[in-house]
Length: 588
Image (cartoon, rainbow, N blue to C red; front, side, top):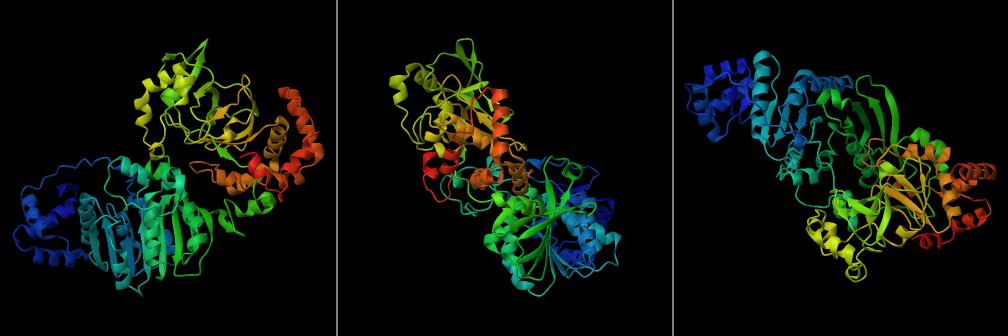
């Protein structure tokens, strides 16, 4: 049965018919509804007259809901909501005030009514009007079936969570024991923006990123993280608890920011849920739990939601952020600053034109077009999925490198490489239509992630996307350095010996143990420049014996015909001496 574009139960339908057909006053109707289910302002001015018309023709049709998953709207089923509130109840939590910032269909509110008996007030905020009505009707249905249950004052507010002023509630209920509960949207701000959604926070750089970070990946954030921070800002000094279902990355980011923000929260806990089972989505998610109005904690204990089994603890330890505190303690001696600068590969955002394959004596682009261009600006090209072997000499892909440094004018291509210029210019619209704002105001055919370091002949690289802790030595191809794409990270060298020594250190067990203790396997990028820059290769070189280094050199020589020896090891160490500044410039 449907009312206001939402389904209602048969019980609610009968109740509405029996109580409202003969009434003409929405004030009286609101009073009746308040007495029945505790909801204040059940109807607004226009809603009541609409209700009368709907009741006159009430039918048994089932409303087919629109697909709101693209907006990160994964409604919490009643069984899971009940499990969450029961678990909180078992922790001794008995709130007097419950706030659900994005209440959806109201399953967390119903579960709270079932499992918490001391509630005095409930606030639910929801932007999608049919869900507002469904929540109201579900609450009414609950009290029709549980007439003797205590009725708190309930407000279900039709509003964007970003426009709602939580400080009003904060000031009104300063002493009540609080529980913030819910399931904010599992979507990023850029995703909602691409869907032309209006349910977005006002444009601001709330993570205070600067420069390129602010307009590329680091400027993107999860809506749930923004909402969580809003709530902490408003309620961190209130006695109570916060419990939200969010993506794992949101929990990690909040714990990471805690070192700087020092929110008055403690007992930070993460309860891992089976998102495929609960929401039929392939997203790693958890219940974030913390105690408000307490001495700040800077770590988080991770549990299995279904068994309450403790899995690990992550967070801040001695000013370092780590993914497994126990394991980190065993490998922390190499956590410092890498003597060489890790770089990200080339970013062009024009795969169809810029990425090529060689077929006989010509190139074919990703549009399957045969093209004829000069060879000088074409380089072998590796992507994350290519970095599987320990040593690579050949690439399956090629790319056109239009600049040697970011911002360089590209007019020289027309003069020196007319075929290449003609090919690029024929596809100029693909370059000008690139969505990223980093290309605004830049020369034609611009790329990013390019500099002198890109042209180092010998590179040691790792994929940022894959959960493998294996580094690859990338050798020149046809006498030219090989390029990597922007999902890869690398350090470059002029001497093959230095590259070989580095890969031996980086593929050691100590390095793997350390990286496992600071990386998060569910992150979009398991490895980042910030993480890799924590690898102190000089310290590693002191912890691995000369015999082990020499044995690894012999094995690499035999398997890959490298013809490298130990003779430059001392010079390599000299380049990495911490007290010297030159290592940060020689490989820049």
